[in-house]
Each structure stands twice: as structure tokens, then as C-alpha cells.
Length: 411
Ligand code: SF4
Image (cartoon, rainbow, N blue to C red; front, side, top):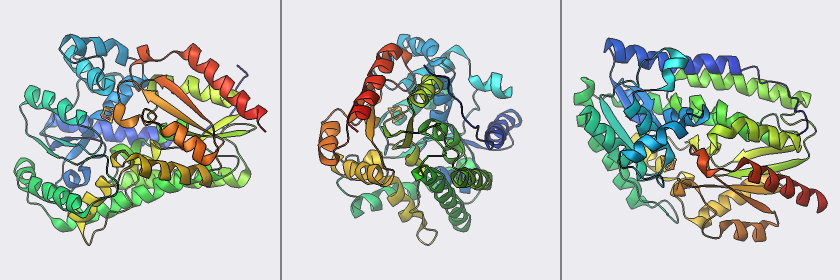
């Protein structure tokens, strides 16, 4: 593989500080018991929890850290031995396995000896049923309430009866959350949080949009790292401050023509989840082939521009029912087609993540349909988000190299 040179994104130092603040606050609150803690799924009702003064801990983010530091494969067998199948979500199995072993990567990173104990567990099945199954384990372990929203999936369009149902479910959570929080719900505070969260979405979307420039100032792999605050701190001003800084730097990189991939020749779309334990090696592989993955479904999933403080519950319900993962294939294909055109994409990469069917979209003919429709070739990469036993690096390198060669030859 050719040596990869690149100009580092300076804002990464601030990113580390912002993320550290988030975890240190949680660690402190768990230790001092001075603030209530809500565990929440990544596209769940975090804004509601924030408005009631909860600190929010995201269990999927914790699982992604286990994937990134490649300890997930040590913990998955522990959950398997506890009755959780190797075929189900490896976020769930690695996280539960780590818990059963009494370990967390937060210890090494932030000196937090165990995951912060929740006062309430929140979920939304808009992304998958697994978040519910995952949290039932912890509801039993910690003996705390489990509250959530059940959202229909595979929608042709967002139906008003669905929005009404989800909005009603959100409102129904309020009395119990008030009791756990020990404070009254303040609708004006909820509106304020939605505005802050919407601004986070706007800024994060603007960050991703800079990748439309040629050459692109960031790649999918960078975005996977920098999306942290949009996932775990939306609804907090610190996230917005961070994205203002990052956006300024990326715009400057665009003005100066600083490329994320030196000599960028090919531009790809990444559909599906990251392979967390292989971010660096995959980033280096594509860079060495002068290929920039400029856009992805995954990193765009934390854009909730529909939040409206004038209609807080309905607009939040509509935003959470409109995410990509909820849609049917036709809507997903239209979404990808628009991005392929806008970002000038030469090829689409589908990550077939063994243990996450919800975030794997190539299994029902989409790859062929879209390639035919757009005249853009595709490559399916078999792997997994956390379980590296499902990923062959050697095979993937061979396939990616052949794919790039094929595109090169067709020019
Ligand atoms: S969307 Fe996939 S990876 Fe995420 S929690 Fe659900 S099954 Fe797991």
C-alpha cells in the first residue's frame, strides 16, 4: 500500500475535550448522585430527557467505542454464553458482554470505573427492535424503569396517524419522567432544547456538505469520528460550538484546496454502518487508492432539521419517524440517488453488516436496482460493525482494489 500523507483536522483536539466533558459529567453524576441519568438510544427521545434535566448516556455510543478499540470480540462470547445469539446485534452483545465482565473502555479513557448507573432507560424502535431487547436486560439488572416509543418501520411515507401515535407516546412518557427526575416538565425548556438540537443538526449537515467540494476536505472515516457530539451532545450548546469551529476549518480547507485524500481521483458513497475496528486501515486503503468516500447514509442519520419549537411533540415525532432507516427501499433509493448526483459519486459501497439487518440495505436487490438506475457501479463489503470475526480484511482489500481498477479502466 502506498504511503498515505494527509493534513490533520485541527479541531480534533477540541473534539477530544468535548467528548471528555460529556463522559466526565456522567462519571461525576454517577459517583456523586447529584444528577439523574437517562440511557437513551441514539435516535431516541434525548431532547425530552434533556429538558427534564437528565444527563444522557448513549449505549450505542458505548458499544461503538468497544468496536473502535477492538475489545468487542473479547466481550461478544460472554454475552453468547449468557444466551444472546452470535447472530444478533454485536453492539448489544459486546456491550452486555463488557457489563457482565465488569469492564468499560471509559475506565482507561476517563478514569470512570463502571458505566454510569441509569435512573431510567429510554429507547425508540424507529431504528430496530434490538434497542428494546438490549434495554430490557439492563432494566432487569438495574431495576429501573424502561420507557420508550414504538415506531412502525418500512414506511412508504411518513403517515400522519403514525406521527400522532408517536407524539402521543412521547407525551405519555412525561409524567413518569417527571417523577423520576423529581421536577416538573417545562414545555418552554423543551422548546429551547429542540432549537439547540435543531441547530446542531444544521451545523452537522453543513459539515457533511463541505465534502461536496472537489477535492473533499473530509472523508466518511473522518465524519465517523467527528459525528460524536451530534450523537451524544445534541441539545447542548457545547456540540454547536464545536461544529461551528469544525465547519470554519473545513470551509478554509475547501478554499485552500486541502484534500482529505491527496490526489483524489474517485468519489464513493458508503451505505451501511462503519466497521468500527477497521476505520483506520480502511481509511488508509481508500486513500492509497486515491479514493475518497465523500458521503454516507450513516453519518447523515443524525440530522433532525424538522424539530419545530412551535409544535414540539408532533415535530419531534415526525423527525424521528422520518429517518432513513424507517423508510422503504424506494424512499431509500431516491435518497441515495440524490446524494450520488449531488456529491459526484463514482461508485457505491454497501457494507453488509452481518449482525445489523436494519442498517444493511443490499439484501433485497437495492444495489442492482440503483446501479442500473444511476449507471454507477457498486461493491458489497461483507463485515460487521463490531464483530471482526465476520470481516476478512484480505478479501476486502482485494475486492476494493479490483473495484477501483474497474472504475479506472472504464474512464
Ligand atoms: S440499528 Fe443495528 S447496530 Fe444499531 S442497535 Fe439496532 S441492530 Fe444494533
